[in-house]
Image (cartoon, rainbow, N blue to C red):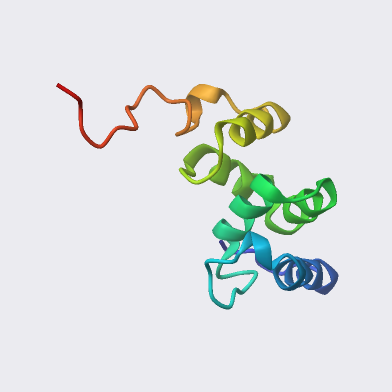
Length: 108
């Protein structure tokens, strides 16, 4: 996720989230706000507080957050539904609620 020239205070807040909320990123190694934006957005949308979500929206922008809501296979249906309503995204545009089968194989 490319963020361009963002205020240092916002990047510091993202770094603070990464450092203080290690339970969000327990399965990841060292993370960088710009290089790991997709994962950071996913985890904060799924587990974060309202303030953390607001910080992510300000730092990465609604376009990047919408992309994650539409494409992610890692966030729950509840989270996708909430952010689809909040960000004015049709549920049909999301991977989570699309007509595509999520099954790897079809039963007999």
